[in-house]
Image (cartoon, rainbow, N blue to C red; front, side, top):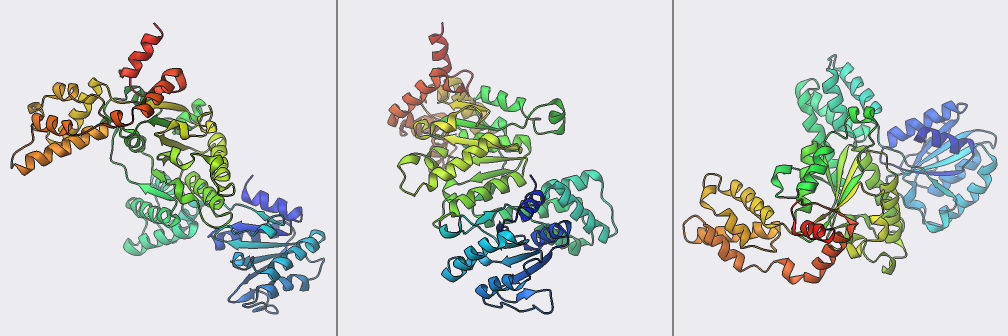
Length: 504
């Protein structure tokens, strides 16, 4: 149900107190005014703390700097008069006992009157005593058609024309921004060169990065990594390559649903995070990184509000990749956390969204400790697939060495014995191989020469791989994957060979 339909339904049903969390005051007030006209030309009164009530000359300034008086004004309007009262930033006064009591009294009286009080706020802050009388309605960011109409309006003002391809690119790049931000960045473009140009897409993307940074929940992550930068993991690569066109309109016409997401499980340093970045780059989609810890706030209801904000922003930016690194640390031990159930509610909201989302947000979650994840996370339907990323085999280690050395010493690659390096580094992860090369470079640099195969082997002998220090955890993960709980990311791993022997 759209916002307009839901809001009009609440007006007709005489919901007395409606709470709309949004930073887009101008846009939501225009929508409310339109709803009032469609329902019989209802009067709309707007109040804020500085100017009081605005609009009607007889009421201008009434209730200035007095939120209680602003509520008393509702009772001054005739009982039979249909009206909507918009109170800006009123969330700041809800903890006041007189304001809270007055709102609860009004909620009783207005049930029999065609009047509604609408509280506008950039965030949700609902005291416990008002939870039963306030109805929260989400106001979404502008959709593609609204953005297109706004851009066309600005283009017509400059008497220029844009091709459909450029227009669609501008619309796609602007998704996830408020109309006010879109107007501001396009006005900047017009001020710079007198018109809107295809190159202004980069301006919009920078505004989007700024918007995401201000939420302090999601991070717009630049991606330069490619699928070819991942050594090994052939099964996972094939799976990803088959889905490269799954976000196109041709895929919708074919009947394919949007891909849901991927859970990558394995020990640290095996390329899970690198894979998330490579997916975004290969599919040409923006990568949003979610730090789950930022969802949790100190105020009652703040964590749930941030979770909804994260979901709304991710869906507005769709199609996109939502990367959740080390999700096991965020939701481990939910039942034992003494936070009055906040973590459970945040997890519930997130897990329900994973199961029910229709938007093209591809979630890539990584986990090191599968035991810490709630069972609900692993249930079918949350993700398209769960892949186990194990330690690289000897062949994969050779490929990883070759990748790094091709980047570090492209002209001297033949001077390194890749087969020997792969053979002499059993149980090394990709991250540990990279660290080995860095240490070898330090050895060569300190002696004013290039580093050699022997330097790499010397530095490898000084590193104790995680596979030896965390044997129990790795053994558990391998047994878990061997039981058929996940697909193998590697086609030729030791674990794959072990599984084949089990079924021979």
